[in-house]
Length: 115
Image (cartoon, rainbow, N blue to C red; front, side, top):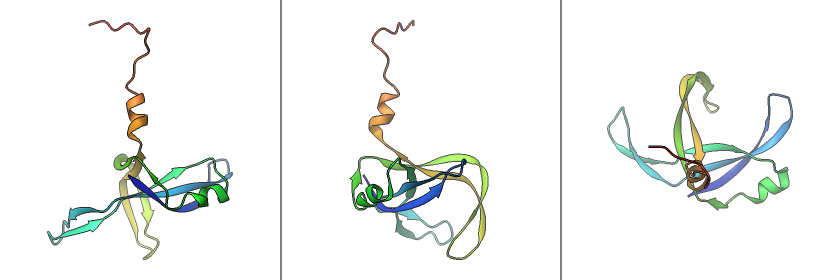
């Protein structure tokens, strides 16, 4: 399950504004690479919508089936808002709905499968 934590206004490549949802996973334990100690964290992901601001805002707090997974990407620079530090990443966190993933694996009834 993921929970909608906030909305975010963004601009697409054509300069059009739209609203997206920031979704967050449940708490999960991870081990620090530096100290080796365990701590809890939650992953977040941005999901685009076709909603206006009012509709998007009404979804804050709503839970959806799904998970957030790490997806490898071409390397890119990312600025940490709190510190201004620029880091280089080669992944993003993406929302995955298991029901939609299953549909991609379905075969049409009239499809002939040769073995």
